[in-house]
Amino acid sequence: MPSSLATALISAANAGASVLCSYFTRGSIPGVTLKGPADFVSEADLRSEAAIKDVLSAAQPGVPFQAEESASEAVAVGPRFIIDPLDGTTNFVRGLPHFSISLAYADDSGTIAGVVLDPMRAELFWAERGQGAFLGEQRLTVANVATLEDALIHTGVPHRGRPDHEGYLQKLARVMAQVSGIRRLGSAALDLAYVAAGRGDAFFEKGLSPWDIAAGMLLVSEAGGVVTDQQGAAVRLERGDVLAASSALHASLLSMLNAT
Image 1 (cartoon, rainbow, N blue to C red):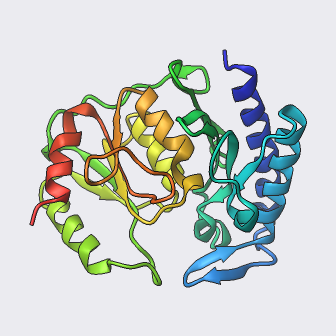
Image 2: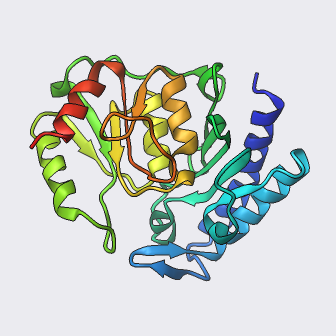
């Protein structure tokens, strides 16, 4: 059973999901604005974040937030809730039913509890440090695929306005030549949850934000996977550089990503 902390995260995620579903089922998404090149925010993002904060503030009074849509107010150190009220906004505003809510509680030692909720499929992924990772009540374990030739790899493509397109394409070409398949689905939090659930064998991306990866990294590690940055060091949330994979494949992928 989840602890009171994880239960609060789950309740908050469900509150945010109610907001997102109410907008998505209308068929058109109001109040969409551009934060930066190919980087959208909608009225639904803002209202989902507000609903999530209301639940968490009631459950854990005084704990500060590190949240996507109020990043200017974010607290990046110490005990805090790390909130992405809608991971996959581009999918959401274009009517693609693949997006998520990603919530975590972290301190300076890392993520302690995390939740990734897929509102469209009603799939709840959650984990607590030292307690395992779960989809609902089912314990998760990373896939046992042993060779790159059989591996399915998830990734995120840097969109317009992000640096190092050429460097990414070189890495992608090396990986594509060796693996069974590549998937780019548009929600990093769900990509990580899928690795934890064995639906993919690895995920790599750079340029992410803490709220994209804080919960998902815990899911993968608690499901028996290995999570580092793409140089093999511990992930720094503020850098957003991640390689998450099963232990059987992590070293090979790390070497491939850093080949010259």
